[in-house]
Amino acid sequence: MFDRKSDYAQNKREKDAIVYIGVIGPVLLTRAAFTSEDEFMKWKLWSDSDYHATEKTGRSYYDNSLPLVDEFLDFIAAVPSVEDELFYKLAESEAGAERARTCAVLMVQIRGCLTHKQFRRLWLLCVEGMSVEAIAVAEGVSHQNVSKSILKARKKLQKNFGI
Image: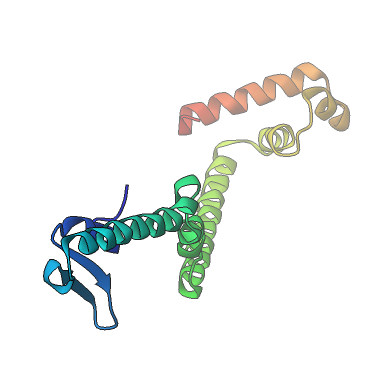
């Protein structure tokens, strides 16, 4: 689609004049400026074809791909400012501190409702990633004792916290 404000469009719109772009802006050469109708038509056809060719060559690159500015516009606009980075880091650190405070409060509440043995076994299972069998071997007790202790701890947590 061609630009309606281009030189080509202005020249096509003016049927009784030739539009050319001068130093101070568009200039209209009317039929009266030419010696005959044939000469006017010759130059009108030439100007139309010249403007059309110029318009096509100017658009041929953009018809098949994106213009350079549009290709990189997202990258240019996506570069965060120094202030944005600073505020992002501050918000990130505040969120991290809030998570740490929440975790600390939850840990105190969990420790308060579980026995020391239940808390240690649940910690080894969930945080350290040990299996029930490995915990039993490390403590020198049976698999059944560790399993029952962890089940009781989970029931307490579910009852108290809905976890």
